[in-house]
Image (cartoon, rainbow, N blue to C red):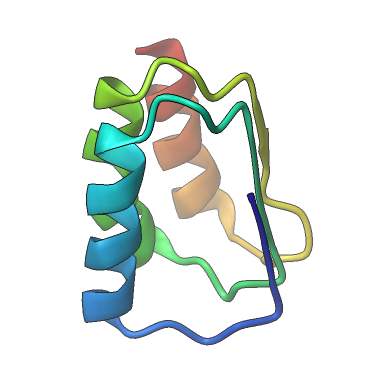
Length: 78
């Protein structure tokens, strides 16, 4: 699934997270230039724990700072 250059509200991220949690076919998730930040990632992270089919996650062009990079490191280690 590819989403690119869209501006989502927290409610939109919650809907995406719910869908990812139950989807068992998506293997590639591309969230390019989606203005992701720690708040949106905190909404998405639980869905990654439930979805074990995603093999590739592309977060390019989101301009995340060190704090978010640290948060992503914790996500990847789980």
